[in-house]
Image (cartoon, rainbow, N blue to C red; front, side, top):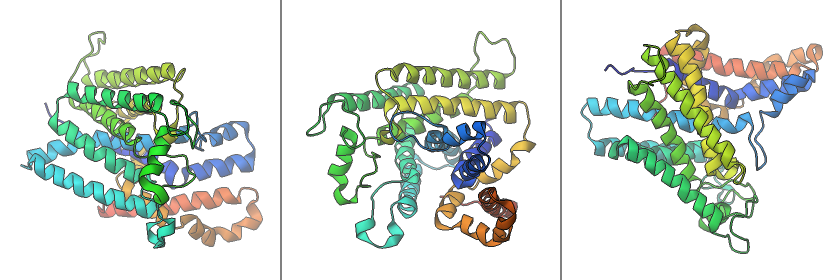
Length: 373
């Protein structure tokens, strides 16, 4: 069976995910504020993280990124093995890549470039979550078969649930889930002390169990794509239709599981609890199924080209938008329009900033310049 060398749907979905990080959410929020349109206000509200319990669309951005990292693992490992690389060489590369991602995360969100130890955090960024989830997942994937991979993923979530439910933080009852009073945050403060991210309610150490499972869920989705598994109740002879349905059904089952768990164990992104992991992995499965069906199965690819351009340089655009004030550059270019365009001037600025970023990404794409780690 010939395996696809690269899925355009995966690149496009990665670009879709990055779009909201690099300025898309600013466009929506500024447009909603300027127009005061009811529908846009609802959409704009989804462009913010929930404070603690609950879920908005914007809470999907980070886990979707991890999910797609997992999807890439079987393809990259297969390619490296076909080129004669040993597993040890793959692990050395994974260690190097994870270390670079972790340091870039410190540059991005942990104030590393402030050169002030009093402002430094150890961990507070998506790239660091990817570094942890990626390395552990690639070891699991290369050492174990699919059934054992699934068993370990389920076991990690069960273990995390046991910790959150039955182990108390000092001075608090077991199972308490408050932003600064839960076992996950206590472990964070215990390990990092002054280098913890302070009053932010995020937990990263115990949440790594969720990071790993989220990346593993991407591996499971990729496994569906790479295997010609047919569903007995589907009459179509098209194997891609079968794969699309299996992706969608798996996603639906995970979301349904999350909805049931949410009755007793609510969704909390900040500590990446098991309910959140089930929910976001399920949505990621279904979202990828949609992109895969439209782009790779039905062949409607032209509309997604601009997303592919962003998606194929995701690390570059992620770091670039952290280090460069593109909105400030945009203001310098369009400030003269302010007198004519209020209250829509912020929309013009955010759209211009996004176009500048895309222009750079398009230039890199045409030149064949892709930043890889």
